Each structure stands twice: as C-alpha cells, then as structure tokens.
Image (cartoon, rainbow, N blue to C red; front, side, top):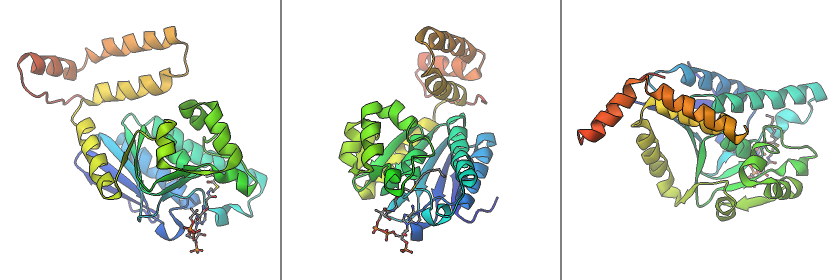
Length: 261
Ligand code: CO8
C-alpha cells in the first residue's frame, strides 16, 4: 500500500518503517498516525516479516512529538480521540507478535518518546534526546508517557521528566534504563540491522511467545505469569521449531526455523 507520510521498506524478514516528515522533525499528525496504524496492521499479518525497525527520516529527529499545529485548535473531544488514536497504534505495536526495534537518531520528544516506548527496546545515536515536554504546552503526555515510561524507568524518573518537561541526553536516558544501547551516529543503522538480523534468524513461534510473555505477563501476579510461561513452553513443543532447534544442537549444525506463528 502507498503511504504519504511514512515509508515501509522490506528486505527479506526485516521491515523498516520510517516516519517521513523531516521538515517538521517527523511530528505526528492525524495522517501519520492513521498510516502507522495501517502499516502495523499489515506487518502483523505479513508472514514474511519477522522483525520491524521503527525510525525517523533525516538526521535530526526520530519524532519531535505530536504535531502542535494540528492540535492547537482541537476541542476536548477531538483531543481525547487524537490521544486514543496514537494509543491504539502503540497497543497494536505491543500486540504485533514480532519484535520492533526503535532506532532513535535525534529528538524523541513527547509522542516520539512514547512511540519508542511502545517498541520492544531502543537503540539510539549519541545525539539522541528524549523528553516529555507536554507540560510546557499546558497538557499531559497522551500516548503512554505517564504509563509506559513509569513502568519502564520507575515512577520517580517518570515524574521528574513529566513535571519538568526537560529534554535529556542519551547518556542519562541509558542510565535510567530508557535506552538499551548507544552508538556513534554513523554506526546506529548498521548496529540496529545487525541485531534485527540476529533476531530474524530465530523461530517465529518462540519469538512471538517471548514477546507476549514478557509484555502481557509483566503486570500479572508472578505465579500467574509463571503458569503462562509454562503453558507457552509446552506449546513450543507442538512447533517444528522445537524439534529443529534441539536436533540442530545435537547434530552440531545451525538451526533452520520454519515454524509459522
Ligand atoms: N509539532 C509541529 N511542528 C514541529 C514540532 C512539533 N511537535 N517539532 C518541531 N516542529 C517544526 C518547527 O515548528 C519547525 O518548523 P518551521 O521550520 O516551519 O519553523 C521545524 O519543525 C524545525 O523545528 P525547530 O526550528 O524548532 O528546530 P530546533 O532545532 O530549533 O528545535 C526542538 C528542535 C527542540 C525539537 C523543537 O522543535 C521543539 O521543541 N519541538 C517541539 C517539541 C514538543 O514540544 N513535543 C511535544 C509535542 S506534544 C506531544 O507530543 C503530545 C503527545 C500526545 C500524543 C497523543 C496525540 C497523538
């Protein structure tokens, strides 16, 4: 499908989604959000794609937030619906059944930090910057900034970021656990691709189960989540990938996973 505000490039099992409005630092307007919803719905069904990379066009920003010119004159109902529209995209990303790596190559502010938080983990360049500056606009984060951020980095850091609106550099973002790894600007793309390829070489069945167990199990009581883990462990044995993975180990060869999930 043709998109106007995003790009979706597929290279074998890896799809790269690029938010493509560099003149406004890839700000999220209703069209971007609608197109992101469509592309993730397509990628969810795409049997070829095993890993998704999400990034922003240009060398300045991942996403500098929701589009302020699109929001300024909204009424409360429109604003609530706008917030829900991006929340629904982020929930779809978490329910994709395949990992999404955020490749953050500059500003990730407001809705940008929130999009990155809905990915499975964040790799960032040394120039990346994060923040929830909504407080400076007289609003609150609206796409998970008060919720996913506090679940990931703890309530105290989430409160400091949401209350001050400060933009933090990548070193602090890594220190508080928001970012997994930091790379020189010119190395980020290759580093993300290398990890994406490694993940794509694993089995779909166990990858999907891992994502769902960690994501959906996280907020459950431990004994419930452990039972889900044991069920998923058992279900893996119904997949050809389990026989292939274990046989490959015993036969001292590389596994070739073909199971469908
Ligand atoms: N919305 C609209 N336009 C933007 C945005 C934005 N979020 N960010 C940057 N732009 C535009 C600028 O207006 C400018 O346009 P023009 O060239 O026409 O003047 C262009 O991008 C380049 O930006 P700057 O000239 O400002 O570049 P600087 O290097 O001077 O500054 C900053 C870069 C610091 C990133 C600065 O642009 C900035 O502060 N941007 C706004 C950041 C912000 O407040 N983000 C939060 C927005 S609110 C939000 O995300 C709520 C999320 C709720 C989600 C639910 C709804 C979907």
